[in-house]
Each structure stands twice: as structure tokens, then as C-alpha cells.
Length: 242
Image (cartoon, rainbow, N blue to C red; front, side, top):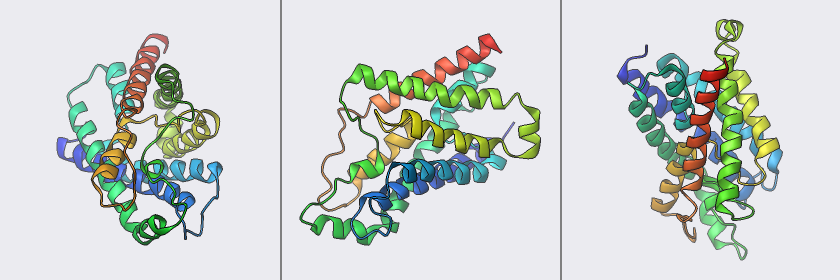
């Protein structure tokens, strides 16, 4: 059992690192005057996977490295332990906002230059997800399925003692996230994590990014509700089947 303080601090730090890497790779690929501009979807998928790797390994000694309310929810439903769920989710949200701010600071000059370009690139996609085809029901279903594809294997990995003893469990999860991005990310951008999407969306709305456009609040509920449903279903499926 991790202490309350460790859980809170660990999730803030780990989630901030996750978003710094994840939003960072999106900024690198999107913004003008970035050396990685137009590097493509595969680069983005691996960038997010490495963000999970760095963030979860950093947070693991303090909190177990959930970094995701859907993962926290799935574990709570499986174990029936809700005592620290609020601390996990609060830490994840604060960390996600902090990571987005750090990404903005890292690419500050590129954000400024982007606004001056004749064909400025939209910036919301650096911070949060959006669908290729806007269909709320279909978008939610995509997020539910993709999140089950994340949380159910994570719960199953916990049953494999060798992974925990060798310390490679987080590495496997990082590659799982890369795989989800490559296979299931096309329709919605694979939020699969309410904090990952909502925290940076809040940061986008508040940060003084020039010519940034709107934060698309009409869609913002989808990458929150879909992953939470997916995480809950994964916890129920695991509890019944394993």
C-alpha cells in the first residue's frame, strides 16, 4: 500500500512526464521550424509510448505509476479498493496540466513562429485528441474498445510474476500503448486516458498561445467518458474471467 502523499506526488510527476513526451512529440511533428516536422504517425505513436515508459518508471516507486484514471478505475473495480482513487485521479489531472505547460515552454519559439506563418497549423491537436469523423456514438465506442485493449492487458500483466520481478512490466505496457496507437488510433487519436486529454485541453484554453483557435469543448466529453467506460468494463471483465 502506497502512502497518500506518495500516490499524489508520484502521479503528478509521472503524468507530467507522460504528457511532456506525448504532447512534445505532437508539437515536434506539427509546428513550423521543428526539426521533426511532418515526421508522421509512427513517430507520434512511439513518442507517446516512450512517454508512458518514462513516466510510469519514474512514478512506479511512489504510486505504482497508473498515470491514467481509466487504469485506476479498472484496478479499483477489480480489487474493490477505492480508498486512494481520488488521490490518483487528482494527481493525474494536475500532472497532465503541468506536462502540457512544460511542452508549451519547450516549444515556445515554435508556437510563436507558427502563429506568424501564412498557413499556421492548428495547435489543439498538440494537446488533445479529435476525431477524423465527428460521430459521438462511434467516437465513444472507439475509445471504449481501445481503452479495454489497454486496461485489460495491464490487469493481466499483474498476474505474471516474472514481469513484476524483472521490472519489465512497464516496458511491455509502453509497447502496448505504441501498438494501440498504430492499430486503433486512426479514428479518434486514441485518448484512452481522460487526464491525458482533459488536462492538456484545459492548459490549451488557458495558455497565451497566439492564434491558437478554440479548445473544442463540445467534443471534450468523449475522450473522458469513453476511456472511463472502457476502464470500468476491463475491470469487470477481468474480475469475472480471471
